[in-house]
Length: 344
Picture 1 (cartoon, rainbow, N blue to C red):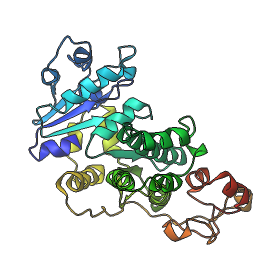
Picture 2 (picture 1 turned 45 degrees about the vertical axis):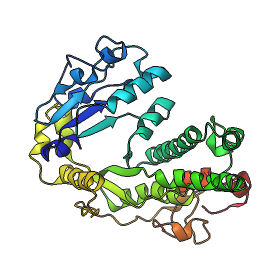
Picture 3 (picture 1 turned 90 degrees about the horizontal axis):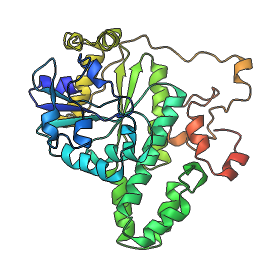
Picture 4 (picture 1 turned 60 degrees about the horizontal axis):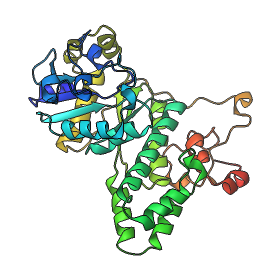
């Protein structure tokens, strides 16, 4: 995305904010960065702009992370917000943060400061569940921060959200009903905060139509269970050329590509940053049909059925086959629903 923005003539800074495993410098062909964000955090360089590194192409700069400093992934509250303030002052047209995986408060707060948040998943059940969990935790983190100074709302959140297991608490719909009892304008502000939280979801390494439908599980769950307005599942095809460019630390190889993942990313940049209508790139791979599931493999699996409570909202309906959003759907049922439901 940084390359695509720089190609369009915009001064772009990519920030490696995955402080526990910084490696973006290697992807950009810089084996050993001469300066990192650590120098700003320990106050040896107060001007964060002086830590920006030139890359292989004009208009593209790197603020490198440092994976060799113990504890850098767990910086304290004051240090985190000092960094956030200075990131907002970077001399750039666009700043892209790579925040890495995880749902610690630091990762969630980096995600929430950005006007555009992108959640990248792969078409695998665990990745889809993790992506959904990140979005759900991000929403609750946004709400708790927004209403921290309003005791009547914050008490509802504190009393009903089990931070160790959000699935054990009430659904967002149930929480909204409780907030509604507080009347206006509180419920109006609550609903505005939810409506303003609009993460973008990108399905990476797409190969088949089935992969796309797997990724749709997250969109469906976010819309139905969390009530979030997520319309698009952006996608980036699996591309061996991109993999080779990363593996060899030669990002210039990506520039030669007019198709494949590079084309998908250019579409994504046009939509996210320049408000162009999103036209999903065509599938360029063989589209597989759903294979028949042998009886031995279908035993004890939740089956997709018209009786599913999500059926009317689901675009991955495959009646008679194992349910593709079972993990997300089932984990967000109440205990009573889990006992009573025999279908997803």
